[in-house]
Length: 396
Ligand SMILES: Nc1ncnc2c1ncn2[C@@H]1O[C@H](COP(=O)(O)OP(=O)(O)O)[C@@H](O)[C@H]1O
Ligand SMILES: [Mg+2]
Image 1 (cartoon, rainbow, N blue to C red):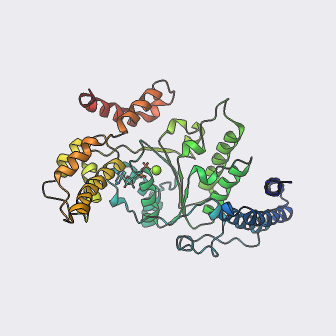
Image 2: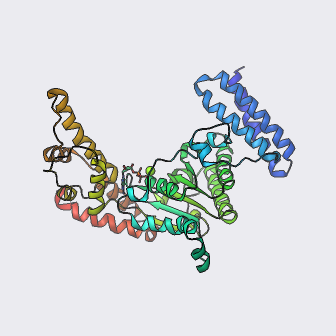
Image 3: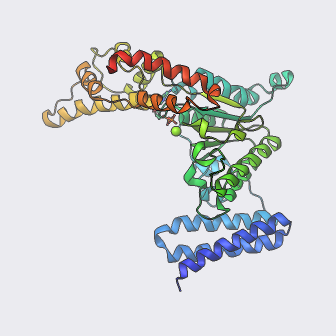
């Protein structure tokens, strides 16, 4: 008998039964079953050292669920507790789902351009905290759901991190690998766990990155488990919004048309914000930020460079700067002389650099030609079309 296999099956069966018991209101049985799962998961950790950490977090998660359904002890997760890594004081559900990570020290000022997205986030989550009286006075609805979309590497994740920092709220960052589980029902449970953990806070932000992979458009051909995962998101988002003030769900995706349409209805993601590639001004700011503290020669003119970086993503612009610095550094390895990074370094790097942005836009515009939702993404369609027209002479 393959013991790990049997154990895994047992964990799965018990946790499914626990879920059913919980739903039927039999919290005592649910609690016992979750405790069993916790013990079995611990055994798994010793049997499979390679995935030991994962099983241990899972075990702790089951214990939390046991406590949770039992209603004996509901310990709210504190942001401090988690970002300082004190695992004992934080329910380990968050370990399982890898949520609430320490947020990098990013502010809105560090983000070039994207004023529409920043303003929208301030309106939904920052001003209600900083100007509560005026907010109440005008009866402005707060929180809700905001879906950012646009080409890769242009600041979606960074915007969400800045929102977390500037609001000071607990931050739950969730990607597909955090929730997707091959066992039936487990992914849904992970989604529930995240929203429950976030609901236990005094205000929180849930950031769902790469949402298209977690909540894909339901179609007749879709496997059932994806359909039920989308349903779980719908239920949880609706509840989260109804039950929590000072809370926001931020979604990010490069492919918003692949996100299930029901998620874009009021009550879920009611605001869609396009995150474009940097314009000239934003490009210059990214160049300045990336080169801060580096010895850059006076021959380098960021404004001139920005014209040649038209249509590059923010991460590509950053990479160009790193590469220019590497050129100077490599010479230093040979010569020992620490010369400045000069115009020639940038020129050579840019000449060799192949931006992926135009082919990304081309592909997406092509895909959207026949999409019934294309009107929703008109900002992106216009921006992409404009960029391709600008770049046309260069590419021929
Ligand atoms: N608008 C921007 N302002 C500042 N830095 C940016 C911007 N866009 C991209 N970057 C840089 O590119 C990196 C990748 O951005 P990220 O937010 O992960 O992109 P996305 O989530 O849209 O794929 C960031 O860490 C940052 O260094
Ligand atoms: Mg991202």
